[in-house]
Amino acid sequence: MKKQLTKIILAVALGLAFAFTLSCGEHSQEEILFYSSSSETQSSSSSKPGSSTGGSAFGTAVIGIQTWMSKNLDSEAEGSKCYNNDPANCTKYGRLYDWATAMVLPSKCNDVFYTADADCDIAIPNHQGLCPAGWHIPSEEDWEVLTKFIDPRCSGSSGGCDSVAIKLKARSDWGASHNGTDKYKFAALPGGSRLPNGKFRNGGAGGSGYWWGASDKDTEAYYLLIGSGLSHSIDDKRDLRSVRCVKDYLPPAGGSASETVVIGTQTWMSKNLAVDVPGSVCYGNAPAKCAIYGRIYDWATAMALPPDCNSSVCASQISAKHRGICPAGWHIPSDTDWNTLMKFVNPACSDKPTMLGNILSSSCAGAGTKLKAAGGWYYDGVVEYGTDDYGFAALPGGGGRKPDGAGRDGYWWSSSEFNAILANKRSISYNREYVLWDSPGKNYLFSVRCIKD
Image 1 (cartoon, one colour):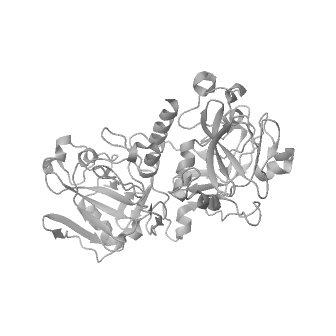
Image 2 (tube, rainbow, N blue to C red):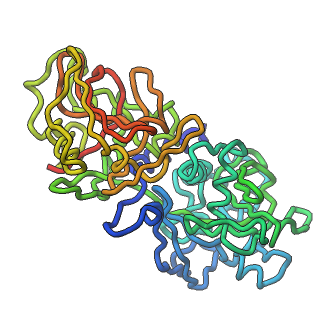
Image 3 (cartoon, rainbow, N blue to C red):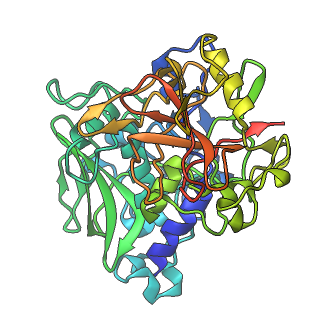
């Protein structure tokens, strides 16, 4: 029950961070995917009791919606070790910790399932452990968000994960035939581990890296493994493994306008909305999907109108800048708002709808590619990322009456009503360069992207 609660609350805590990062004008596509800051500083005052950071500086890497430390933790805590008891390995790889030490819990927590003892409770959603204030030990869901940003196919040890390993590995210290590309500045290194019997294993060139997660089951806990590929599993909490901290994300209640992008004369949120209101869902009822794509809503819910507006004309209740479930000062984009965006991206796009019989069906050539995020688009073995020219970072959150298409298609509501049972939307598909303008059923579930008043 607590593990499920962890997933649910994580989704709420991360739920508004669904696009990846903002474009910064002259930055290249590669730079849009991540940004490594110069450094931050750990201080002993920011650590939990029992840890010591020595005031060391650490670099960071923004990867998708997350900010990670770009090296392993080296806080000297009782029971922690350097690989092979060599201090030089602490300098290179960081220290190794048993699970309870990493979590700053009593040592008995290595031997009991946390629900069995109040002393072993895990803080939800962000368990600080040995990490500095504002950072936490990554949960299983945190690791999943990271790996699926890099390749949506990656699940445990199945297809896609080998490519993730290569992109997370440092460019050196793995051995000539095993080094990575370090595409995202995560700089994973083969720090090895130590078994409960005191034997060190798999450190250094040709070896593996093992990182704890803040998720456990009985006397075992979750960890991520990077070697020749990437996988995850659970194992003995008494093993000593590395720790990599991830930054807390706690958005303001009800929605966040903290991350925006200016495109032409408009200011848009750079992420899909994740306001948790009755009737909204995570795609597939999976909190990890909410953490990536935001929540999906039927039209009346998105508009904050009575449910019967999904089956009746409600034009009299719609304002010119209709707030709906957006934060104050923001509104659900109308067809006029969407058309302004389309014509900025491609001035040749029409702001007058094309009709196929009684059905609205128009498209804006080239806009899909330019608005799609530079990661996260995948279907049936084909990866088709966008160029994200403006930082809009559109993501394929899927949707529909029976939602499908996450990873493949993205759909966004308009505040503009078509008739009693239909409302307008815009959509982008993984393998199409245009943005489609059409009118699905109001009872379908789609994403919401807010625009500033």
